[in-house]
Image 1 (cartoon, one colour):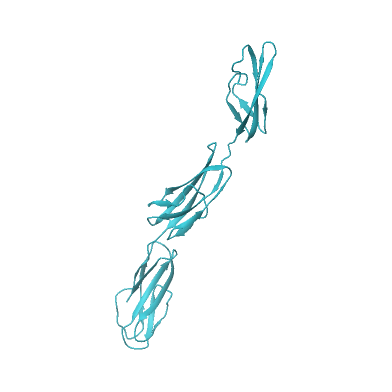
Image 2: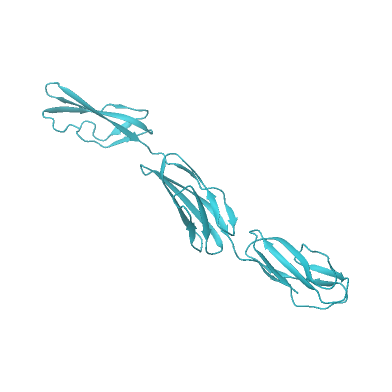
Length: 232
């Protein structure tokens, strides 16, 4: 500054640093400054009076336009509380998790940390956002897509039946997720029944070793380990 200086003739503003800084009013007492490269600059103000007497004052000026780096982590599918591990680089001073989309509420265990536990209260596909900022306000974000499902498949094996030869059972399974496995089992009966396709949604029962009443059960498990069953 040229403050408290009488008889000022010129104000010169030398600079050091890796980039080029531009002064809006380089020959005035006050000036706005912008620079072309991130660095710490030394700015010097020289004032000279009519008699040629000069004085100099300097300051360190940090120019930083580079936002911190952020990686919100891998997409995933879950049916229970999980940990989302993100990576934050640079000089981030603020870290914030938030929900971008999804029908339910999202709970973050540590919403201001890179890694946090996460849970939802409604089955849906969610987009979660991790935003980071540095001390100068440079901001970056990344998103991650999470499928949340806690509803078990609905299994219907049909009505009870009686047979004296091979019989086909055509089940119906409804699920919001993909089915990972089917499992037919015999849970009661005086003998043993032969289940032709024990790992399929539908199966034939070819024979039972002894006359009597048997209970057969189909269990369907989805890709999130939610399981539902029905029996006849």
